[in-house]
Image (cartoon, rainbow, N blue to C red):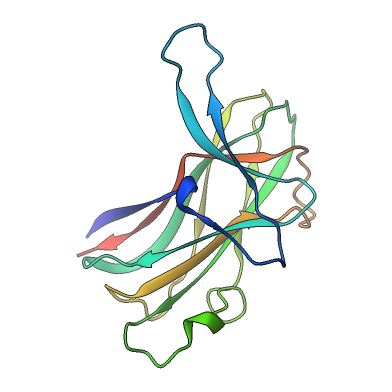
Length: 177
């Protein structure tokens, strides 16, 4: 089997409802003297408030199984021996199911929160890669998926100060036929 990738652009996300905040979405511009300068979208997840982004779409026609979210993150300030906890939850719905999508809850009736603890680079601006594996029970090609992704600053392992800046996009990886 091969691995497929869906790109979930930060700029195409939606905020969650009022139960948690929405991270600041901004553009990071390189500080080098050359032009043109490199730029990318970032989502800055706060160190004290639970903030999340929502994504949705259809699983591709060649989807078989699996779901791993990968992303890149950096902190603007030095974070010696610090950790950041990123988390995600998802739910899938088959087309034609008698389910009110307005009542979907990825956290309580979907996968539940799955998280990963990221060791933050000690040098400001260095990039760390993270991944979160979700189990999409009963998922099939063409199903509609809803994903909530964010930082969990309430987790005792999250002791990094400042925003956890997720760069550009998240990759949703899965097994394909």
